[in-house]
Length: 164
Picture 1 (spheres, rainbow, N blue to C red):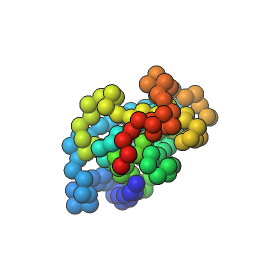
Picture 2 (picture 1 turned 180 degrees about the vertical axis):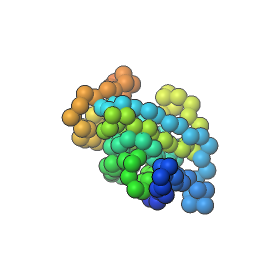
Picture 3 (picture 1 turned 90 degrees about the vertical axis):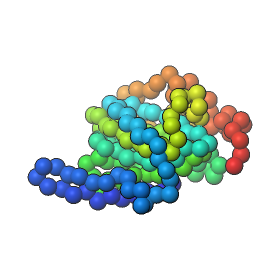
Picture 4 (picture 1 turned 120 degrees about the vertical axis):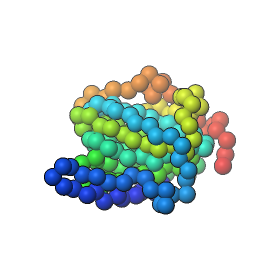
């Protein structure tokens, strides 16, 4: 993963900043997606064999977890839309990502290098997989989709995905 810090310009009207500048990336992005979540919502773990994602929290605060399925490396980030710097995380193919909304509401923005075609074309691992050990915040009720509750384990995923 690569982390990008984008300095925000603050003034009386608010702030502005750049998330994506093609001069800083060798990845060609084709689609932007935004997800709005409420406090406690957990989304993921999802990924695939081909898609790069540039992830930014536009509003609120999220806990982002990435997991490299080939190297068994977990990374944890706290992304805060109100921070003085806008931090974006570039997630490569074969790295799962999941996040939890820590504030009352959060807006999660991600750029995709391939078009999203549906959950059937993604890898999914159960949101609380013991090998990933996400340690989600339990200070509030978690809201989780049936897809994320009923996905298989990381061990099961590794049995059938192609090697790099």
